[in-house]
Amino acid sequence: MLDLGAGTGLLTRVLAAEGHRTRAVEPDAAMRARITATAPGAEALAGSAEDIPLPDACLDAVLVSHAYHWFDPAPAHAEIARVLRPGGVLATLWNLRDEEVPWSAALSGILADEDTGTDPRTPAAIMLHGALKALRAQDSAWLTGWLRDPSFGPEFGAVEQGFFPHSEAKTIDSLVTLIKSRSYYLTSSPDRRREIEERIRELATVHPELKSGNTFELPYVTVVFTTARN
Image (cartoon, rainbow, N blue to C red):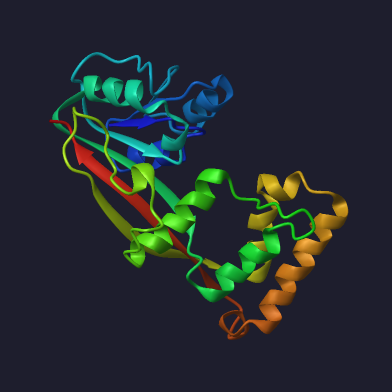
């Protein structure tokens, strides 16, 4: 298996731990070093989606986690097809906080900067949250471009989509710790940081789903698009 655009290797480590023979391709040297340090069973290679340093037809699966939106589609599709065996699987996935859950949507409202109108999520995450809502509602009018008719090019077959809800147990303290690790918090002013933490703790005192006990479930949904090499 190949984790393409692997970053620091979050998915790489999971694949290797499951016993798969795993390679990771990542252009950033510091991130590759992190993969090597934390996933010793995986091979970390310098490269990109448009230039994969592997021979033809050598892979059973290519997985892309939170990176596909950075690819140059046409050359990336051709290169992925080159390294996959016939029938090999390409899967792109994004793990999103589920904003259909009211308190999770309220959390997003806290994290958005109401003074400047900015949103801490990346443009891709904003698009995918909208896509998830539209796909669940079968609202094809909202979807445009690739999301309306997803395709990975002529080398691949039909695309299937799936949504996989899951959650992580949190306390209010561990939720605050999680938010403090995010770039939008780290790059905020001290005053803005204090405001975020205060409002998150206030949310826990007023929202019914968080008031019921010391722990609660932080909801996520993983959005996956899969296809097979012709």
